[in-house]
Image (cartoon, rainbow, N blue to C red; front, side, top):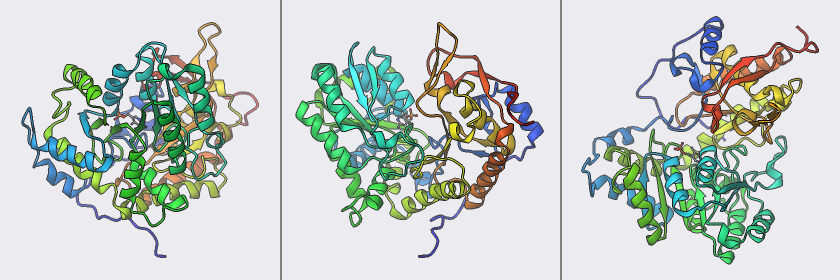
Length: 465
Ligand SMILES: *Cc1c(COP(=O)(O)O)cnc(C)c1O
């Protein structure tokens, strides 16, 4: 088969400012070694996130001009609602300014202190919004998802036995809903199989607990089902997506991912009474229910994006370009999560920098060096994001895995730019023994990774100089 190429041509370009290592050393120091504090102009290849960073299509830019900015009853809302309804089957659709607003409104409405919310793996804002209500967020990833080097086709699955045990332990009354994140972001951008979704759905329906999808990457997940799961190869990806939503009772969505938009989200369900309560909260902080904190033109861009994202040529290219990065690294022995996920490659920083103890933040060390060596901005998904400092001992309590995520913005970078990323990572890999750890100098009580300041530690005596 011919090589998979970018299924688009470029109409508008945005220059990248070239920088030297010396300049980057200065800029990173000023940013407290925190990638979130860098200016994006000081980054060459920005792989911090795939969120809100998509390139919009000519159709989407055209749709912006059609935006109806009427405060109430906007035509753009109905267009948006119809697309979401047709895709998900959900009756009630509430636009929000992004995914976490949908999460806040949902959890504030359904959760009480002492409740428990199971998820295959909570995204960071999802966990924070569950916990802000006094409920507990529980991650129940399937065991086959937890071994970074193990190539399983559906490492995003939920552990169904653990879900049943959780329901037995806490009781149906303490579990307002179960959530499945597709694809499973923090567990490695890994897909959830239709078989697993069906099992989870059956457990929830038996128990009478609503099942919600955190649907941010529903199209990439559907593509993996089509290409990896027995029996789905001939089904159009849109049908697969609809079959996924049909197993759930509602969803939260960040349109900044598979909405191919730069802002936006929604909350949708079949529950009219719940929606009424949610709309009251929406009005309090987001806006009237026919715009929910978005401009009418944003609703138009999302409506177009939700259809474009199901284009199979686009999805084939999308997944191939992420795999291209992963396979070239793996071939050279660089430890990554395998197989490659839908939107990102995860470097296994604990294995990459196995001479740096977890308490010295190897994920942070690798993230910093990728920037210094090549101006590449990745994101630590390890102890900085999910660990915490023990208040008694001052020691870092590490997270389960120590990953560095290189998230690929949709339709943004070319193959030669990805080749550059590969070259830089291989260079860092060659020199990995010279890297040392970091310590946290300053941190906030929640979501500390966004604002923490770090300090580089001196290399330990065992490292060659
Ligand atoms: C991005 C994301 C969210 C939150 O969405 P925002 O638009 O960033 O607020 C929730 N869940 C997952 C899986 C995500 O990737």
